[in-house]
Length: 217
Image (cartoon, rainbow, N blue to C red; front, top):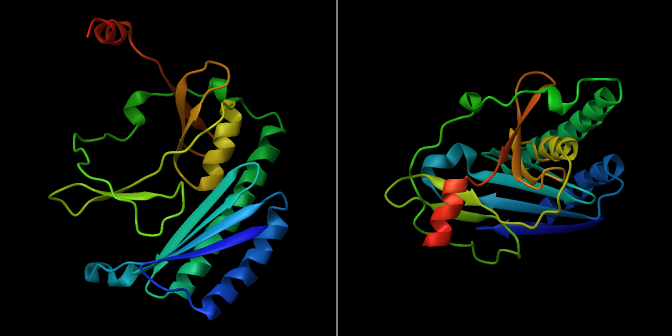
């Protein structure tokens, strides 16, 4: 597995690099099909975030993508935290697949009530800048002007997949939801975590009135 280590707003010492390589050996044993790992060591310059000024982000790529990150005052502690989350996500994926093969209910039986989803306000980002030295496809940090809010944005290509595969990917990246192109319906869709081993799925299709409005515009 190729391992790329990048420092953002900081230099990564040789000792830190060695620690990363040592810990990634465990990942190779847990994910033998992984082909590449990107490890970002980030130093937060904002003095108000001194307790979380060091962040380590780990992205492992192979047949899918596994991602974890952690923050701490010390970057070595952040590295330990990110590694713990990464191995936990791999363990959860293994358990979920085991439950799937033991006759658990399929995702088509899980409702998707819209009112359980978190609300999104009307704020819009007005500027977007990639951080200096960012590799292609990396996250962008998008500030909302006039506020301390920072949105991290990423655009990536994705092949259509089944709902079950989308849930697997959501567990791997450690998020509460996952956007994907549904293989069966062809629609833009999102799966999200509910309680226990239950999940919800939402399909997004364009309304007829919206289509007509665009055609007449």
